[in-house]
Length: 127
Image (cartoon, rainbow, N blue to C red; front, side):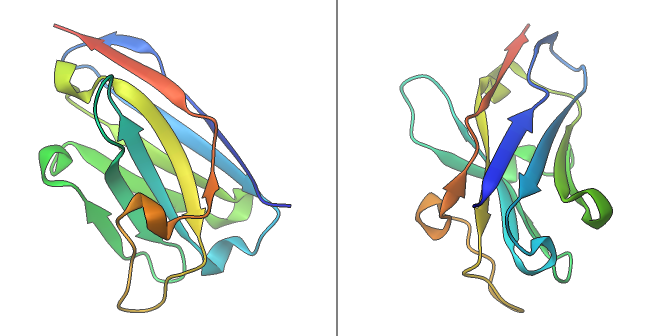
């Protein structure tokens, strides 16, 4: 049974840093794509960053390039989202997601490409 436990959300000030964690279980971690998505109040779900755990290929949405990084820990079946220089527009519920519909050269970046989801962790950034 696939389980994703996302955590690390908090209320912070602009330009501070935050690290979100996603603990995964129930599947072969090194063959899946993992992603972080976010949904701000009144807005659609948006892909923030994704990673193919088999080869480390990553994707970032433009608004977080240079500020956020995604990393994996195969020994602990975990994925992290390091958020630096956060801004008020980063305020959202952040969700960890997993997919086995990925391979070398293809990394899904839409939410419909992911089958498994965490419950979410809230990030609030004040100016």
